[in-house]
Figure 1 (cartoon, rainbow, N blue to C red):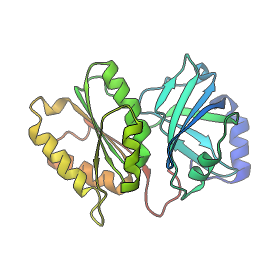
Figure 2: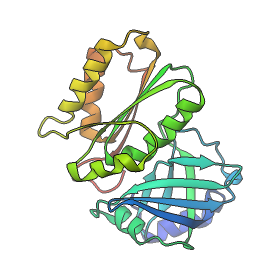
Figure 3: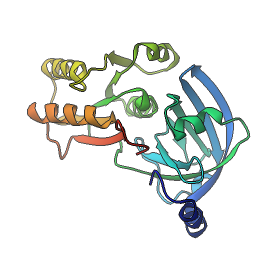
Figure 4: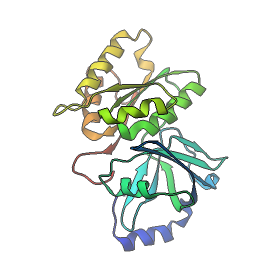
Length: 245
């Protein structure tokens, strides 16, 4: 629900108050001028669903707008949720995240969403862009804890490659392409599949970020005989010309 009338947003918050969890901004770290890591603390044991790595949460960013974000870390018992925000300054969500300060009190909704860690996979492939850094961080840590393997591939603008030394997981980078979205990424993916010697049926693919890039990568994977029902999970975070997803 990216946008609703103010009266409806107020009514929803009152009617479903149990789904809105109070949290406080406890720590902020600017990883780069365009990436802001924020730690939120609260009683997260009250969430109605157990967080699964890959899930999203939601915030009301102004009177009428809601935005989804993927935690880079979420711990029910410790009451901690961390998010790496990409500050592109092109919408209400980015402007809201830019203004957040230590001590701000907010209400967190979730978790939920379409993406969830697949414990049966041997290799976890994550594709996205700047908006996917948090998801990649979360899944990479989970994969390592379970002694499996991962491969993160991100389409990044040149100025945003400065995030690479500020994160603690291995990130592979490719250029963005126009008009054919994700063409450089597809080349890397096909090379990975060609050289992968184990069972391709044991690879889990998580495709997020730009909707058009996701469509092209998914189509290519299907052409490479990847089972789209069992192996591919997708969740678009944004699309050109549309506000909030």
